[in-house]
Image 1 (cartoon, helix red, strand yellow):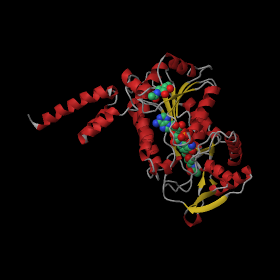
Image 2 (spheres, protein in one colour; image 1 turned 120 degrees about the horizontal axis):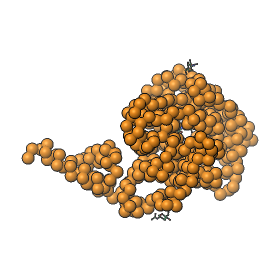
Image 3 (cartoon, helix red, strand yellow; image 1 turned 180 degrees about the vertical axis):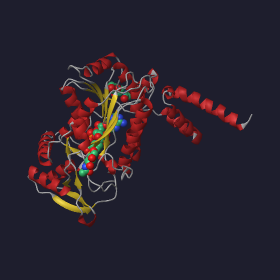
Image 4 (cartoon, protein in one colour; image 1 turned 30 degrees about the horizontal axis):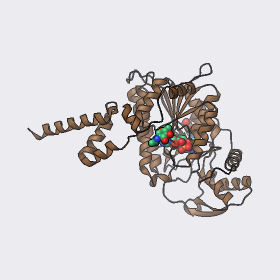
Length: 431
Ligand SMILES: NC(=O)c1ccc[n+]([C@@H]2O[C@H](COP(=O)([O-])OP(=O)(O)OC[C@H]3O[C@@H](n4cnc5c(N)ncnc54)[C@H](O)[C@@H]3O)[C@@H](O)[C@H]2O)c1
Ligand SMILES: *[C@@H]1O[C@H](CO)[C@@H](O)[C@H](O)[C@H]1NC(C)=O
Ligand SMILES: *[C@@H]1O[C@H](CO)[C@@H](O)[C@H](O)[C@H]1NC(C)=O
């Protein structure tokens, strides 16, 4: 027997075993290949894989039982259907991933308010205080939006959701956000922003009908670009962080799924979004917390005391841009997992077009909080942040009617009001 044949036999056996362990792998050949490589590389790892509950787990009931799934069953399906029920004429049905996140909560609530069907999905990970995500979930619950707890990498769960509801749109906001955290936990970026995105698009392309997809990219894709304002046609091949690189990869992956399967996809490059229910890992948020605690705050400056500035964009403006993207998205053209014709592929900047120096941000916060900040000026470390962001929003203005209307002073006032009321209850800790 020649060695090649032996290898085939060996591969065949491994595939057979892999299919038993991972019935979903027939839908995801890449998973099977991954398994093969990990098996060839290290046999004991195989047992590790088998005995570890997989997030992209199968529909096999015994395995589902083992991992104690929080989803499934008639009562659960009823909640899913009810949340996704359209209540206005010409309403759309949207699956919002990352719905317990900052932007996801606001977008879900806005869609629900105007009578669209909305179902949320979020894994409630602890990148920042999960109590804040639970509080947002409770808020959505009160307005009739059910947020399913699950991971975007769970193909069986996503397929189940599409079995129960024929979503016309997917608003994909789930991601590992944050620029500096990428040096601490790089694999979480690959898990959510690359593998997770691919899984979402895989399920979308196989769904009948295929939904239209709108998803969050980031202004960080402009990376080391020095030409301002940033226009969609500018180069985006010099990311300054792994976060930015995964968002850029996402834009290329979106191109592929649009090209091969006829998925209609719109990518939105958000510019530093802020507002009530915001993210505790962002500067405006932890500056507020530290100023109130009397702790010093670190303000970065560029080379030669250069100004660090951000095109801060208020959440309500971002929500309008998201809804306009959903409303102007054309239908996907594929069916049965096959492309039938060319489909829409778009990328838009959603910014505010007025960069504000971080020192100015701090001055506004001092005034609103009536507390003087203890400022420490530091040279900006080269760990992913860029010195300046400024959006050219001409394209979004033309195609989406996007017109941001909240300046930083007005928006921060609303944020501070929310912050003080949210954390004054005494029960919640700001971490
Ligand atoms: N806020 C900003 O300034 C900003 C700027 C540019 C881009 N973005 C992008 O916009 C989107 C929303 O950002 P945000 O500020 O609301 O962040 P967020 O962290 O508040 O929201 C993301 C949500 O996704 C969930 N999530 C993460 N990985 C998941 C997974 N694998 N499966 C299921 N759920 C998962 C998280 O639990 C979180 O609730 C993200 O894609 C982010 O990268 C945000
Ligand atoms: C299984 O799920 C139920 C309901 O969600 C929960 O109450 C229980 O603690 C879980 N059990 C384990 C072992 O995780
Ligand atoms: C902004 O972008 C548009 C294209 O969308 C371009 O025509 C215009 O020149 C850009 N403006 C600036 C100031 O770069």
